[in-house]
Structures are given as structure tokens and as C-alpha cells.
Length: 237
Image 1 (tube, rainbow, N blue to C red):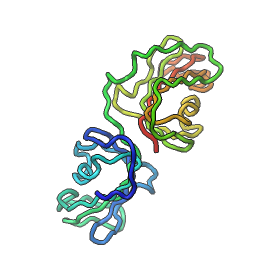
Image 2: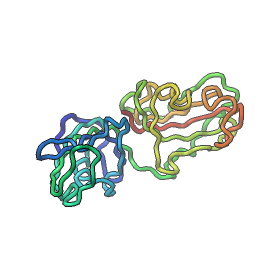
Image 3: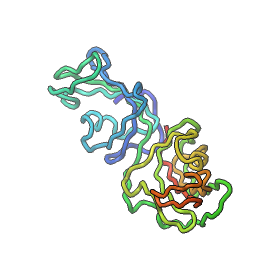
């Protein structure tokens, strides 16, 4: 593994989820057989679980968010003598050593349902007229800016009776939210703009800044009811 650009923060460990973009090349001639940038969607995988070639599991351990690295691997740590078909003009031949330039966008530690902040004592929100953001824990990571993609864990809670309607910790499945108008609830976008990775914030919002006056009956939010979001910001890119 060769570091092109250093990252910062937590070192990737077995069990973490990495969100990355990459360019894959044959080591022999540098011919590109695959890359994620043109698709516009980074890939994610759990380190050490065998979801990717062994060279990725071994080569990306201990990297940090923001790092750009080149990982060179022999065939036995890539696809060996049984490479998959490739969609482009360049294919991987049996026995090919491979190189990947990998940009590590975010490193997400594993969570369980027990990690959800269900014991927080939140003030009710009834008939709010504005979005109110309360910083519960201040992080020291990168600042979320407009246009970034924030990686978050999220509780959605009825403002009047504190009933939890949605919980990403329960499925160990954080959300990736583009911080741009129209991508998610307006109150959540407002709260994320300027927040730091590592922070936990509570956002009380009137219906106009949540799902609208009609609420979200399918989620359990009646019409005209305030919404509270508890957000842990675990990454940004």
C-alpha cells in the first residue's frame, strides 16, 4: 500500500464499513479495467469480511478518511486464475497482478441496536414555528458543507410524545445524505450544514420543515405534528 495523500481520524479496523471510490488497473501495463467515479456512486464494503478481494481487505486496513492510496496486489490476493468478466474493453487475464488507486471517503464503525441513543431526554416539540438545533455532543472532525454527502445515524421521533418512528442503529445501516435542498427533510439539511463529524445533534422542526402539513402516516407521524431528528454524523465526503 502506497500513500498518495494522507487521511485523518480513526484508522480502519476489521468490521468497519469503508466508503470509497477507486480506479482498478492491471499492474503490468496500467490498463484500466474498472472505476467507480463515472458511475457517480461510491462503493462500500465491510473490512475483513471477505466481501472484496483479499488485497483490498489487507491493503486498506489502517487507512483513514480522506486518504488516497495505491494498493498493488499479486494475483493470489486478487482474482487468481478465475477473474470475473469486465464490462469495458480491458479485461483481467488469469494470473494478473492488479493495482487499485483508492480514495477513502469515510470509515464507519459498526454499531448495534443497543447503541441507539434511546435514553436521551428530549424536550417535546409542539407547534414549533422554526427549526431548533441542539448540539448534544460536539465532534472534532471535518465540517459538513453544502454539496457534501454526510454519513449519519438517525432517529426520527414524534415531537409531541417522543415515540421513535425510524432508527438506523437498529439495522446498523447509516444513511448517506447529500446536503442540498430537496435531498431530504429541510430541517435535517439545515442542521447538517456546518456540523462536524463526530457530533450528535437534536433537531426539532415544524411540519413545514419535515414531511409537510400532511405528516407521514406510513411512518406514524400524524398531520400537523412536529418532528424531532437525533443525528450522529459519522462521516462526510
